[in-house]
Length: 134
Image (spheres, rainbow, N blue to C red):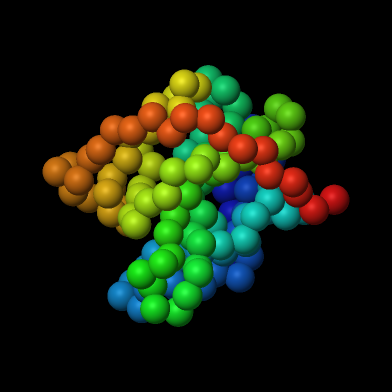
């Protein structure tokens, strides 16, 4: 289990699994405290924004075992309202560098932040609220 603390809340991942057999990326089930937020979340790419009290993360969507249909989306959990959201935009690869309250995303078109030539900027538009298990 992987854990960190954000605003005195324990953020942890259970059941880590490698999705590409080349050293990552790794996904797991994201929890805040004992509350399950979402599964298939990229483990090493969380971004907490003090500006809007949101925890942003990347979710992997496995559509088929062949990979061409699979994609990633940016999601966030609003820590002040305890609501979960997902943006519509789909990515082949994404690593969040920064995001602001206006949904302006600065990201690496990669699974890591090691290559400055892969930086992109994009406005994600509006997010859709997702229903969560009670």
